[in-house]
Image (cartoon, rainbow, N blue to C red; front, side):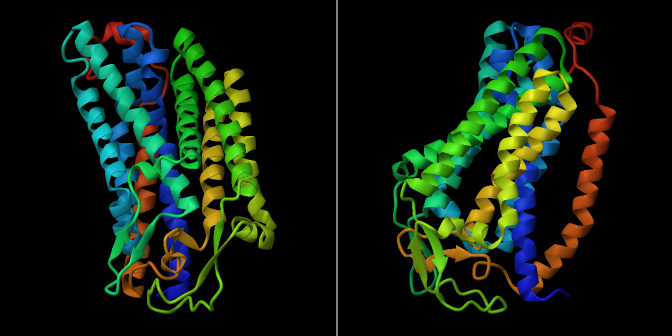
Length: 380
């Protein structure tokens, strides 16, 4: 079995892969839902939009479920602390997600304009709200979350729900929301044609510009706006048993850039985020839609990777008591648990990727208004 420090690093990477996988796969579904009321004009066009993701959205949701399960099993202290501090925010995500299965299944069951318009806006809520909240959560992670531990290592959140809605976190929410909309627009442009494709491409280009501007603004805010990062100043034993209080942590405005200074190759991540997004906009405008979708996915990986690299080894910093911050080294499960999960992941993740690729290959091609009119009794 791999040694404990190696498994800790591997699970940090694997959780990052799951987050990126969720953003890329379920993200384009949510982006399409966000664009649904604006790209589709009339019932037939909206059914076209829905049918581009209808056969796949529930399978893509597996990435979200798997990410939550991996977080619970690999980083139990992070899971417990995050769902305590972000309780109402996570409930809002759950409530928004309720609209997706019901909307997809029932929207076209009744031929009534009011009924269908209501579920169209329900699908919009299910697609637009979760990315916004996830972005706000990441913005709070970068600033530090107000929590601490008692003598029994039970976490206690010392902030409020409204405290989460601070200006920097809202800017991070804009980055996340625009990024997902960009990705959904490129996917929709790839799966449609004519007027719908033109509107989707236009929306993707606009969302790309917002993504890039907000992403750069967030980086400058971290650099120049006085938001302090976190740095461990005591010796760290990577192989030690988890104990989040067995370290000393200081806050510094330069801490967010330490990893980039020590490993200059990490600058490739923000460059990928900006360049990938701009390339996606250029490609989708030129109707090279598949390449645009790939470029958009790479941009998302770069943006998410930029935040992860800046925070490492911190996973959930504490603004109330910096020494209680949760890191890669002290918030994980046991050596045995990480090892068993690692080998299970090596077996099952390729199967998920293979099945997903097969499903998209089988149901590839354009969805057209003519197809929808000729198949009035399709599920979506």
